[in-house]
Image 1: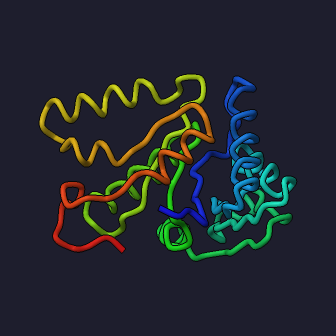
Image 2 (image 1 turned 90 degrees about the vertical axis):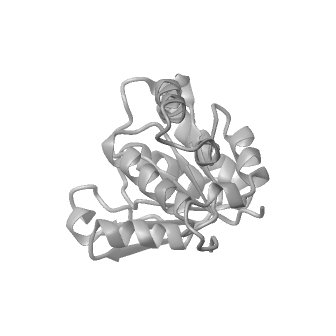
Image 3 (image 1 turned 30 degrees about the vertical axis):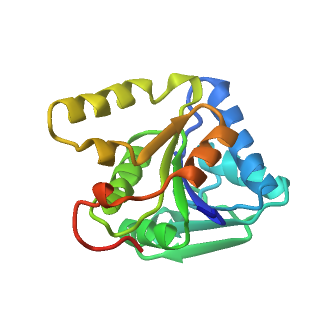
Length: 195
């Protein structure tokens, strides 16, 4: 799978441990080095600002998508390749998905998880055939991964759907996992073919 544009879900906080900031910087630099456009939520603060700044500083292309209502609250980033202002959160997520070939979640909070799970559900339903990944810095997503395995074991998630989500603590390794992933008939919940 050829990846030209990746949506990164991340928060307006940097967390307590500096390792999360470092991971966001490394991811931004890695995307730029590979010539992969970064699509993200358009903020200038938290890990959003860190990943965007790192990609821009490394010569990458960065597109931010932000609702008008959050533009001031999240301090919309003014140093991007392009900042698009949309009507609301649903429009934001739809536009980010439209512009992206894959999705990566950095460590983050409720908004990051909500974005990840919504786009993952779209993939399960067959609305797209795009890979998803967790950048598992400092084992941030290890307990979530255990819980997702529990959902499979209890019969609430099918194993092929669980397998749609890749995980690595290395941006380079995660990019390779996303490039290698291929949708299959078993990963589609509906009969609609992925876009």
